[in-house]
Each structure stands twice: as C-alpha cells, then as structure tokens.
Length: 376
Length: 125
Image (cartoon, rainbow over all chains, first blue to last red; front, top):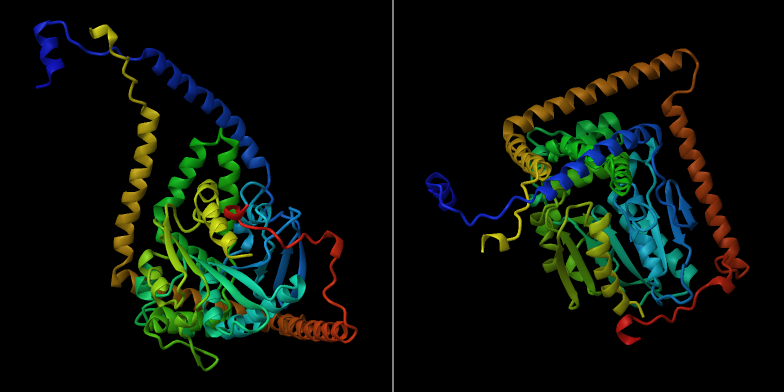
C-alpha cells in the first residue's frame, strides 16, 4: 500500500504535491487550438497540389538515353578543388537529396563550398529492359566521371552513393582502381549500401528461388513495374502507412510537418521501373546467390574484388534501417581495402538518414567534415 | 513543508495517445513481419506475383493484337521507334563531342563565373 493512500484513509495530513491545474488548462487549450487549425489546414491539404521538389538550380551537362548528368550551380565564390559526383539508386528518384530549400543535401553541400554533380538515371523506357549492371558500372558511370573531369578541369572526383547507388559506386571503384588515370576516384562515400544479401531480411525470404521465379517476371513484364516495388517496400512496415496518416492528422496544424511529410510521401510513392535484366541479375546473383559476399561476383567477365578500393572510404549506416538492415551493410567496411576507412552508424532510418530534419543535424555535417579534409 | 513542493504536471492524455500509436505501430509491424517471414507467406506472395504477371502479360498481348488489327501503333512499335531515336541522339552527341575536340573547344562554361578551387577545410582556416 502506498504512503499517500494510507494517509488518505487515516485522515492524516499528507505531504503530497498539488496538481498543476494551470498545466491541465494549457494542455487542453493547446489541443483545442490544434483541433481548430487542423480543420482549416486539412482543407488546404486537400486543395493544394504537391510541393515542388528538386529545385536547386542546375545545368544538364550530359545526357544519354534517360540518363542526365546535372551540374549544380555554385552558391559560393570559392569551392574545394575536388568535385563531388552523387550516384543515386536505380529504383528511386534522385530528388530525395534535393527535397526543398533548407532540406536539400545538395544545397547544403553547395553552401559549404563543394562543386556538385549528380547522375539522374531517369525513368527506364521499355527498351531499357536490356540494361545490366555492366552498363551502369562499366559504361555510364565512367562516362559521367569523364564529363565531370572535362568540365571541372580537375583530375579526380569524389563519389557519393546512396543505397543501390552506393553499390554501383563501390562496384565502379573496385573495377577502376587505376589512380593514375584522368578522372580518377579520390574519395568514396556510401550510405546504407548492401553487400551481404543474406542479411536482407524479408526481401531474402520473398525472393527465395523456391517461390519467386524472377525469369518469368522479367520475361513477361520486361521492366519491373514500380507498383510492385512500392508494394514490397510498404510490406516491410505494413502498419506504418496507417500510423503515418494518424500522425499527419495529429500534426495537420503544423505547416512544417505537413510540407515535409508530403515531400517524403511523394518521393516514397514516386518509384520508377527497375530495368528488367538488371533486376534479374541483382535478384539471382546478389539476392539469391549472394555472390558479391562470396567474392564470386563478376561484371563484364571481371571478378569484382572490393579490396581493390584503396581510396579514402566512409560508409554511413542507419540504426533503424528496415530496407537495408545493418546485417546486410556491415560487411562492406571490412571488404574495402582502403587504409583510410570508417563506418559510422547514425540514428534514423533508411530515408531519414539522408533527408529531413534529422539528416540536417546528423549526416550532413559529418559528410561535410569528412569530405572537406579530403577535397583539397 | 508540503507547500514548498512544485506542482505535479498532469498526465497528458494526448501525449499518452501518441505514445500508444507509436508502440502499436511497432508491435503490429513486428507481428506482421513475423508472419510475412514464413515460407507459407513467401509461397503465397510468389503465387500472387505469378498470377499478377500472367494477367498483365495476357492484357498486354490482347491490347497489342487489338491495336494491330485496328492499324494503330502498339506500345512495342513506339518503344522500337524510341529506341531508334535514342540511338540517333547518342550518335549525334558523339559527333558533337568529336567536333568539339577537333576544334579544341572545352566544355562550354563561362569562366568568369567559375569559383576558385582554392577552398580549405575549416580545420585549416
């Protein structure tokens, strides 16, 4: 029996703090105001269109098929010598790195004095179903690196890859170890990059060859439709869609929250088709056979050995990443042959690692600090 | 002495409700993930994908036959045309690059607005 309860029964005076009634009143008033603003803002939410994304001024300096290489216009008078090339995933739009002013990694890097380029793979057309990883790693990325080299006049480039873009960048780095060539790699930064596909959790189970016939899917559909990819990503956290909408309603009074939510939702739903042959290759050779981890993965007849990567390397992983779990990403640091290498784990999930309020405080300054020392 | 204690903030039911939403979300996700990680689920989802792709292929072939009969270009025709256009575009770009190299012109960029590449890291400033 608690002391206070005993005291109340015996009628003794109890040393009990008073209830903060003013606090109760404040809490109720706050919620009433929010309820009112929610109804007003809710109408605005329905009426207004999607907020703009990817607005940082840029020039398209190279194009090939659906690929576009962007060069972002500088925002300061003095930049670091080494330009940065951002490599995005094949299955999502690159504007996650340029969501909005103040929420854009690209804008942040420009303001901190970096010269920034980005590869946008575009939306694959039906004829792009033939593209394989070889096309990206041995042809498209080297071509873009060459353009960056020609345009910047600098012999080297830092590459930053996110998710599957990190994988493409690491494969490129492993197969282009020649540091004496023009357009050579200077630094490599990967975010949440999977290498051990045994650690891919539910994706691994769902693509088990006993139940998942990738040949039939690609032969029938060509490119894998974005709806299929979107559904599989959503299925990883089935309750989060509903919870997300509840939180949106709860925060409808908060303009900043709503705008940020809409931008991130737009990006999440804005999936693009996965080039068919590339999907077949990644599903069979990486997802099902885990060849990269076994050291048996080949591209264009060449064995991919990640220990050939000797340049300064950083791998940033997210503590609560449900798309690329740590079990799938943690081996990369050990496989890379660089002497100057580090892995850092930051709080957050797969997307909040690179975009949103948390990214501004956590990843971006760390990336700036790491790159700045190595970009002169 | 009792009067000197600061007033106790009341339990905020709205904060409790928010916590409950987050907790329930995590519990539901964990429970459903466990269910979706079973072989039965993998088999069922494989069957669903099989049926979906079969349906999509049938629809696509049906539409193609219909457009062929109606004398209207099909998606395949448009894709072939697009492929040829892309090849022409790429060839033009290669010619353009060769021409630029032949006349010794570097990438077009206004030198006056190019920032100096002399920035030092904050630790050296």
